[in-house]
Image (cartoon, rainbow, N blue to C red):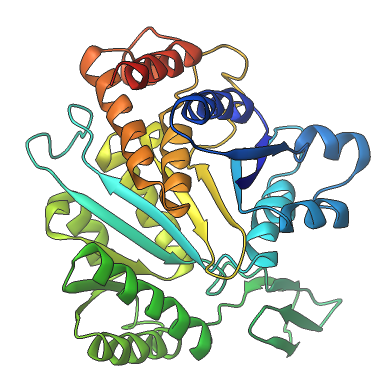
Length: 370
């Protein structure tokens, strides 16, 4: 019996997660899959009522789960960043989900730049360090000193900052940081993943020609770990990788990235593969609770209209099943999506006329027939 927390979140999150649950419950009935679902009210609606983001009670419940199935976060009534940092990034940090896994594969005929080329890339992004740590602030002539306190599973760090001014200048900053242990554990995961996938090469992305300290450490660790695992490592600057992803995605298998660059490259990858509606991700930790979600946002402009594409949420369910060692069931979800694409059962973003629930029903019907 697996225990899964269901967090629909905001906007279209509830609509697409409902279709994922529809598929998973059919598998419960027909494929001896046993999951205990716990739905949790975390998101903008509760925050606007109570001011609560992620409570201590939430964390107790979440820690009891095997996985989290997450919809979307974000609401125009809430200042941008409040929900994202207070819920999504907080979960990643609290559960030490230090790997973000984003598959990027060709979904013809929607792959816009490489319609005749098949590709299958696994992007693995370090998920807890780099510039996305929330370690920043502002300096003004009135406050000439500041300090940063960072707590992570691997370290606690206090940085005292001081500046001198001429005139009325002020500025803002974000501190990026990579720890050796953080890069080592991430690189070990990448190498093990590559071995399981049958790859002999890893592409490691950085910007070491400019940020020499952080990404110099990154390259040093990756070179060591690749040698220990007998895997070739190809280092690429992030700008060169962005161009290569457009021009020759078929040349890549496993791509490892730091946090911010991975966020940007995988969104580019989503468009190369066919659109954000076909993208899913897993926030992975080997130590506890991992979280699986579609990549798209809450899309409040189409919420409640039945226009949301459920494919990303269904592929997130596939990733969750893979994580639970039910890869054969995960493959059936992917086959159901392929069937819908071939049959033209599609939501408006992919040029179809089907509703969100009609697409989910079509995947279920396919699974019941096969």
